[in-house]
Image (tube, rainbow, N blue to C red):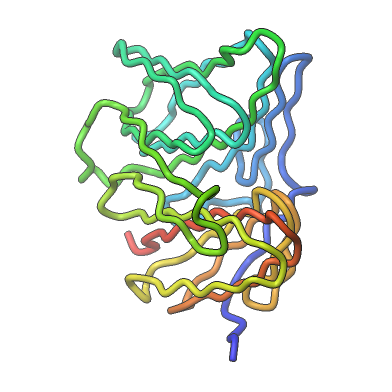
Length: 233
């Protein structure tokens, strides 16, 4: 029997929104000029931006707190450079994690001349225990591993990531490694029912006091991102 645990839904249609002719950003949590009292961080998770960048364009980001940042392309390939000289290409099916201090800057670019790219920026407040490693790109394969949660190798001692691609009516269960942790679920594509809650594309769901979480895909080729997060300081 699925238990409906404590949770909070972050609807896609209620996200912050910033758009220019060549860049569009949707913000699950408070970010920049978008500030709402009910969009506070979920534990150390304080940024989840769903960004689309036009061909040949780039954006520059300045980090306002010591952070652990994960970049996950959804469509296409992005370029990454920072003020310390690191540079990478990151494609769909890959991710990059890096730690960065307050005041650091980095740039994300679209290497295609005429195609849009879509990517997720996920930022956590740093606990201070992370090692300052160079940004590294790691792989995950949801194309050949459908109907299961595929671990995303983010190489971090506190956070666990998984992405799953499911056919309609396929189910899965996630058991948290620590019952005091929280789980944040983000629907990339399709629709899911998670702990009796209906989620549509780009909806988010924060869950706590839930030792295990069940979900069911309600459409074909539905894609779900799952993040296990420590909530205690």
